[in-house]
Length: 506
Ligand SMILES: Cc1cc2nc3c(=O)[nH]c(=O)nc-3n(C[C@H](O)[C@H](O)[C@H](O)COP(=O)(O)OP(=O)(O)OC[C@H]3O[C@@H](n4cnc5c(N)ncnc54)[C@H](O)[C@@H]3O)c2cc1C
Image (cartoon, rainbow, N blue to C red):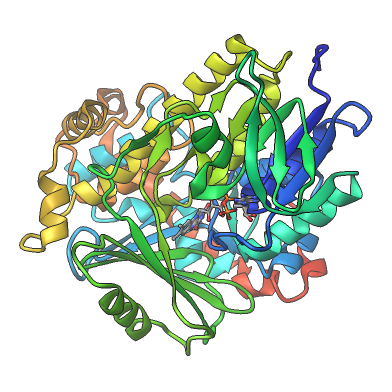
């Protein structure tokens, strides 16, 4: 790191964001260079949901030096190969957004472009037959990606489901073992420096004072530093993403855990089901002017596959983002910086992304407007991309006659999303500008899954004789089925973590 005057960093909040920040930064910066303090309030508590992740979390865990088997044991974790969307297009319809990709590009054209050409000629097999992550998920099997591009296993990618509370504790142990100091107390006031408006210290309600050079606001939806103290506004996106309430309940797991999340559309929102080792996590995310809390809880409880293990817990949120998540000597990470909604499991990813970009643009002084400006632009762009992706899930529906679904189908959408849909519909093209997190395969799965039928395909695929392409695809389909049959059940990877095979891992 270049010379910085920041040597005392204070993290306010001990939820997933706070402990991810502490574990990550203590891995990057030795304690002699940067002292880290976490202030967390037992009185206020944490959100405590957030059980599904996406593949980049592996990069985060590696950066922190986490052993995968130990982490999965400690967090009751399972593997995740994608998300199944049930009833989103219309009741009775289902599709999967699998991780990884359906196949490698062939002669310069995307794999799916060749499939679209075959489909235009009447080829009957769906793209999902060529997507090994989905084939495995549907068979409740699992395997690790291979680094050998000749095997379909090279197209695999995976993430995890875990108990968010246990993940926080796991990270806390790591952070504390690396010298992070923890203070259990409630911050009563945030004091600003009268000359430059930076945060100078925190006044705790027990009378203590915590000073620092830089502060990370991980106080959840409240945004105690970034919002209350520094007045950075929250931009409300609920006109695009209208869900504002959730009810969550754990239930007994009654069957072997499946390696995917299920998101089922409901009258006023959608319901998640996430299999962990020790229980199933469930929740109903809804729009509160369309259904009462009692009705929402009733729907959730009526749609569990095992007995509830606790009383339903309600949460309130506003989808949107903090216009400037970094300002002066404060960085907002986690819910204090914004919340899109949990549909594509992106919140924990945004914590990771924020921390990595913060480390890469680490402030050289308390107030460092250059790195702050760049950081805010990078985060804004990424959030807008993901916002469009989420809006699309709601918008492209055929659930005619249902108030929520009619509302989101007919609402004005961002131009950036309208362009993507038009391009895909005309040409089957899904490579869009500024694609960082969700890329061609992700958009492809959801565009096709939500019923957008491309009228054309990449003309590059016309250069090969149709029969040749067809027999190549038939052979590939057989190989994928055989490879999937040879993979072990998902559960076999969980029982004894020491039995986790390391061979063939990327
Ligand atoms: C319904 C729902 C479902 C979700 N599902 C997913 C999912 O599947 N995947 C995913 O990636 N994300 C999901 N999320 C998001 C995820 O829960 C959060 O991103 C994650 O938990 C981070 O929360 P946090 O640490 O920012 O906030 P919190 O958990 O709210 O933590 C805030 C911390 O700040 C402390 N604090 C607050 N005020 C003070 C004060 N005055 N003094 C001292 N300490 C204070 C609290 O004590 C607490 O420790 C979901 C969120 C919701 C609402």
